[in-house]
Image: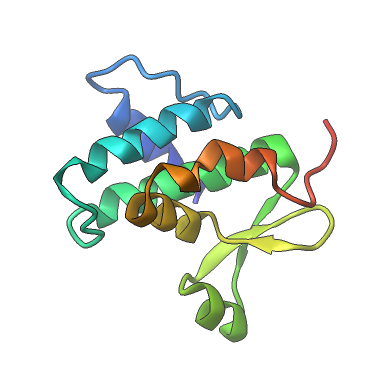
Length: 126
């Protein structure tokens, strides 16, 4: 998933000098990127590749800043989250950054990715 996040960063910063440095503050930039994708209406099929890359980026921020690790979801988790991968926090909780990005895309700004991080349970204190 780290490679997918890096590919998203490379693509997103190719023409624009976006501060995508895996910081918590960069999640605000990611919120703006998702808002830009929504301009033509929230059609997740049209934006699927970009949303996957953004989800990988958000997950990688959790890995680098909150002590999470990428995990393959078991069958029950896959059914619940509708995703095959997610992150496990230091306290053992699992979260679904890919699904969170889809929620942000489909539901709008009230599903902020930066707020998701800031209110996330189970982060390590760094």
